[in-house]
Image (tube, rainbow, N blue to C red):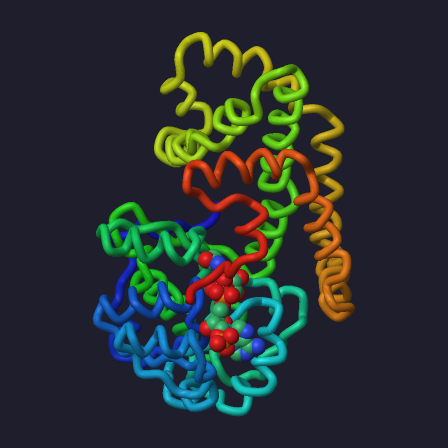
Length: 343
Ligand code: NDP
């Protein structure tokens, strides 16, 4: 069993006396920097001087070049995208890093797969929120917490775990409803990729298939899209799963609906589905997916763009576009080509 610390067991004390350099001011960087500052921690932001830096200044942050921020922080939270971390680390973080510091990641990916190997000297910890940055900030403002996975890859100081737990406390896991679960860089990377290769994409493609089956059967695209995902009910079901359990949330549905779930649900859990999941897991664990993604990036994302194009060419997204424009929403074709992060 993993060790679990609930919100009341997470102490802020170790981080209170240490300056935190937040490198990157995107999804995670902004949320973590704001939450840390609001918990009374001294925060500096390290970023290139561009729109993200401007946003940080507008939020009242002190912004420095990455190397200067790393040099001034006791704790360095490295929150640039995983794809660029190895290069940014080598060019700007490593030269400024010194013994006695703590280097923190929000994802285990690069360290677990050896794309980034920090030299000895600093503690190496992971505090990986199970929440997107924007929601971390919103929950924090409402006084509510969220779960994080914590891991220690290197403990030079003998206090790496307590530092990681206090970072967890300060970014929001220490608020009611939050918790920290003991994990590792490797386990977090595996979990993250497993979700990204199994139930999460399966959900998108099952919902797409459901719309197609309904439309082919004569249901209007508008009614099909709103029924299957456009109403937002699926988000409410997700929230109910978190509060009442995966099966418990079914009690919120009608008896007719419950009977349909119990009758049809098990039929989708096929040996083929499980073998697909096992294949995905094997490719994550033996590193072949990580190597493939590395070479895709090095080759200029040709397959990535082609797969996006093929998906969005589907007629469903034409129907969605007409409906969403009518309702003042952002359809997939616009969302997929627009900016994904602030600013
Ligand atoms: P973002 O894409 O939101 O990061 C954007 C930030 O990174 C900006 O400040 C940007 O500044 C900076 N950045 C991007 N490219 C470079 C570069 N080449 N050199 C220097 N800075 C750069 O990242 P996320 O917040 O999504 O991810 C950060 C970490 O958090 C990752 O490890 C991710 O796995 C993890 N994570 C993310 C979650 C999320 O909410 N998205 C959830 C849980 C974990 P600029 O371009 O101006 O330099």
